Image (cartoon, rainbow, N blue to C red; front, top):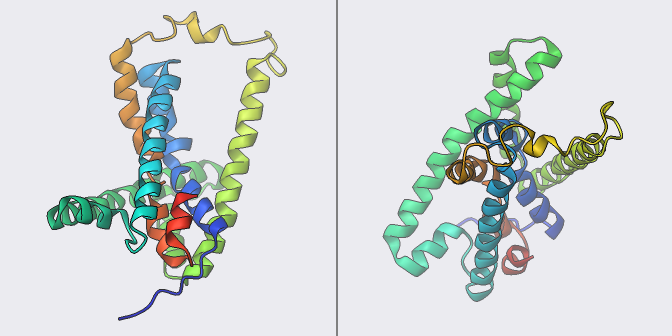
Length: 228
């Protein structure tokens, strides 16, 4: 039986988790949530973020209680039986089979406007890059994910700063724009059910944090890496 290299550091695990969340679902998919929900989409993000936080806390506790278990699918197997692990594993595989092409298409559509190349060609290139990265060694993949996830985090910080400057009237010619939150039909123009429906879309964009429990198997102390 092949042994894992266990070459990932805690910083790799942390950024792999953050990078798994920050993607096309956040940069592109958030527009669909805003259009469907309105300003109350912040409640959708609050609800979904709370659920993700609770799930990750539970995974951390299970990792400490069962340090020999290396994946969240195995947690399901240990707690509910072989059928649960089987179903969770295949559903997770199916999820990423769908998500990876979606991410590539979304990225290609963004780059097509900047570079002028056909979206299908850029999507093919992105798929090739993602495949090549995943075929690298665990340590190389960890370094790649660490630095590129850092770029994502930096981009979000810049976006937040620019949005705050605009909302506070620092860059808006008409002054503060917080009134837009209630100016077009109120804070929740489509009702609370739209907030719950938006939470489903938002949850898709936040999926990826659970990758920590898989990547942690390549670290020296998996239980500690997941708990952190």
